[in-house]
Image 1 (tube, one colour):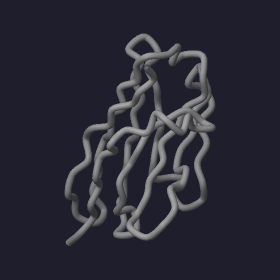
Image 2: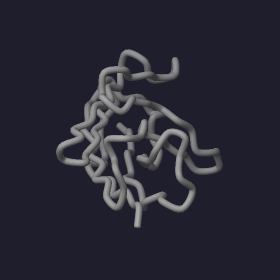
Image 3: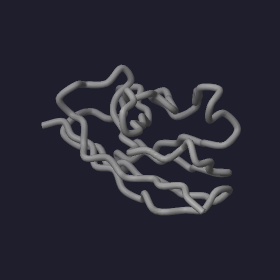
Image 4: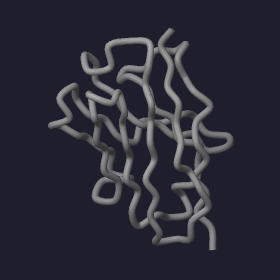
Length: 116
């Protein structure tokens, strides 16, 4: 079965950094575009980073561009998200999935909390 397991979230001060990891399994990870999503309480899940199959073409919305960096290692079926210059509004549960996502494969996510 297709699944994703996220890790690396933590409590961090504004301006700090974190590196999130995503372990994918149960499907041909290298054949699909993938990305990171986040969801804050009371808000819909939003896409914050996308990367193509080869890992050569990342894409970000304006809210995180210049601060977040997505990467993938197809040999390890793993994806990463480097979060720099974190802001209070980055607080959310972060998830990984295909882009577009497979609805039945959402993991538990990893909590990122930015607080002073």
